Image (tube, rainbow, N blue to C red):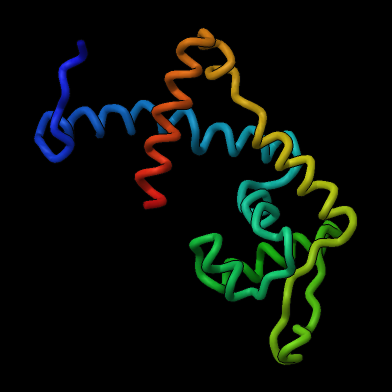
Length: 147
């Protein structure tokens, strides 16, 4: 039977740090950059597409992307130049601009979401048993985050 490690203990912190250190390079940024390249966009544009299922204000986009509002202006400029999105006045306050995907932007967003949902090769190469264990661990970790 596996030995239990107390989560707050030094050994638990070391194990958590080691696990995280092993997980980060598998998940981000390589996979995100790979998908951005495949879609023909930069990572910031791919990040913006993720959050534009519904029109968003520039301020809300800055919050979602965890960046300064001035960075969002450049991202939206690029989306507009590529005809992927457009700025429109908000229905509630014409002084506020919302960013809305065009038909081309919606298509690219849909394709990028499909790519993000495909498991990377490192997961597919695991045995079915290990894939199940990984799923169960991540599900428990997700439950801890949401509670």
